[in-house]
Length: 402
Image (tube, rainbow, N blue to C red; front, side, top):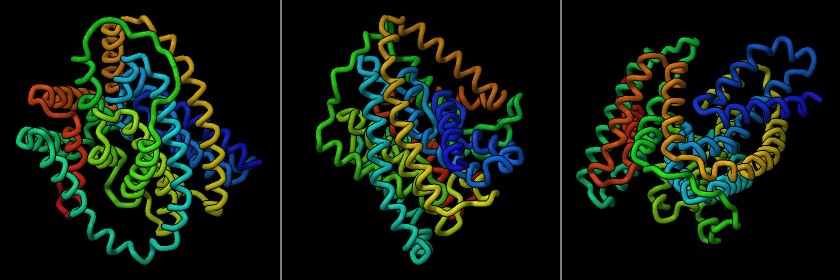
């Protein structure tokens, strides 16, 4: 009873956090902790743990919807907003969401054996892994820049974004909202990958949305599953990394310009694998890789098999919910695109103020201006990921940048 009640509650909470931009699943986990004294006597301690895990998995499926239809990035999937929203503006929004849901499902299936394997070997290899984190990320960043069409401009955008990221993390304590909540990544990534793109996305009307099947070659499916799973394992296991970093890593093998569907599939797979691997890291070496695991560490944790079962039930339900909601994409057809973009921008500004306060609005402005630079310098938006990668590189080498 406790398991099923927890899974049901987690699915509801994960759906809410996935559909509401700026509301992270970590907040939902914190809310569960706040009411645990009332729930545990009725449902048992496994209910709270199952709800946290189910919410985490559900969020990884549903967070693609605001990115696709509104162009608002989630901190976990910031870079994937570009191809998914572009497909929506071509009339293929439902297809984009279905591909993302399929990617998350594929990532979950592939992530289960990987997570179980890490449970066995992690305690023996963790020391060597920690040592090589900074070198690996630096190599990825160098590869991205050197193989770009304009390495000089790419380096400029990467470094300027990195400086902005360091500034944001250093002064993140100033992002205090009227609600007492603090969010640094929301204004940073919304400016770099949200508003900056909406400002130059053109006018006209949102085309009629139609679904004529998935245009996803088997090669993209296989490569997306393998590449997304690998990236998800890396960012889920190593300290200081996030799905935003995984987006950039995946872009080295799958271009979001030339193969947008494959890129959406791969990043969605990475997002879900990251969640599973984070759970494995918590169980194997007692390290918390996300806010949900931090919350989980403060309660009585049931056996890992029970949590995996909760995750599996949540994944099946979240997939069906995502597909169901994608079917309403046709309602967007004919809406004035410029008016919709303005409405989304106003919404993001208000949300930033509510979640991050006045300083958050300042970060949002700086990030938006930085996000416009790639178009001026004719490089891809990918290099704005320096806002996340540069601080992570410095952190990995033990340099206190904030």
